[in-house]
Length: 149
Image (cartoon, rainbow, N blue to C red):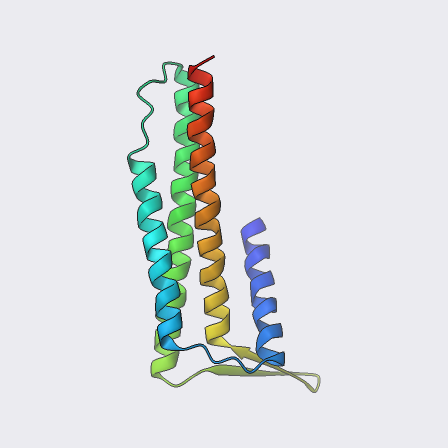
């Protein structure tokens, strides 16, 4: 539920930026953000796959670690899927020369620049990749602390 609220916030934020600013994000910029997202996803999934819990002997702690790793893995997959979706839709809209969606609500004109929306969503994904990296590091530190007790 929190994720949906955050994505709706990003949509409103992009509506705000698109309406007050004339921003034109280049194809190169969007591609670069997507490439950064792809690199972070690859590194993050690599960290999860190679996470070593061989020194842990407590069965309940092993189960807890696996649940945490699965949660982080699912988060990585979700946010990368969001980035892929944004990148593909942005590419499609650019190819069809659809850049802005104009909305008229009770004589209030609002613009939505698709590239701004998709760029903010990809930055949001990158932010959560970083949060997940920190979660993995904390988990690793917790394991070392438990083992050394």
